[in-house]
Length: 367
Image (cartoon, rainbow, N blue to C red; front, side, top):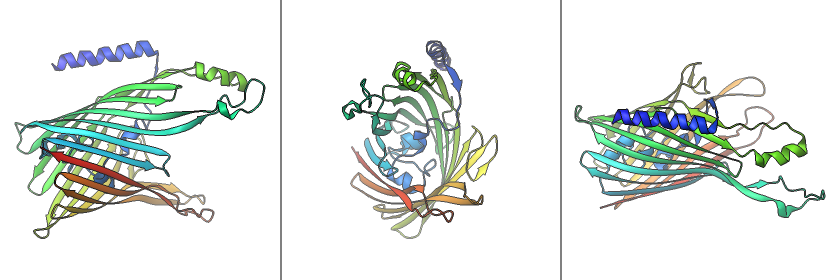
């Protein structure tokens, strides 16, 4: 079976390369819309979920967590708006256990900017401005995740899972791309300790871009620019995420969960806490306090970056996140407040504030 899958993968790659006539590139930030995160619980904890994901959203964070589903049918939806509502981030998922040892799930993600003005034909053939010639288009990224999880027969408490990802990226009528990739995940529980490992894009995820050169030719002729648009294959290199968490019981009603994730990337130096030319490590920490498993309060810190000011000094900044949740009778409502942009003064010439984003997610589980 593994040999057949390997042959199919090789055939797909060869066909894509021949048809697209592409140049292959591995940019540092590829398919970054999949690293924004989903779910009010996760985003309120600074995207810390690798070891603790235990509901339908585990299909995204770590498919091994789907084995913790307590109901037969599990649904979740989310909507968030980033950068003052310019970017829309939407998510929907469904998961169900097949038996006591396995589970499946499906997730759909869309991140896009809509109603972008196309002003190429603003000036008509007579040299006059005609606003009726302005059209609107969208730039959007889509991901479909098909998840499967199964308990290990060799190690007690070990859960394994995987995702098959189908990517579609669209830039109006100008360009689009199709891609495919695989994620693998594992979770292990030992008393009050939880461990998780997620290997994203373990096979490297490729996006085969096809550009519509005809849409640019008219503009290039008017401006006199030498426009050269080539099809290409964009490669997303693997990312490893290691997570650890511990449960604390204070009373019969109050519990706490402290968790941390370490993101390991191998695509060059990134602006993170630990960085080298070959490996970058990005830590993030989250905490969740619950009362009778009914009310949840969360906080987290991520995106630790060093910012250079106008006076050439360096400033470390982080992204704080906060969230609350309510869960009752299979219904779960989670709210999160994240700081997606920080424009606080870093020198004497800036006086802006902070831009925040509110995330709302709703989940429902039933038999």
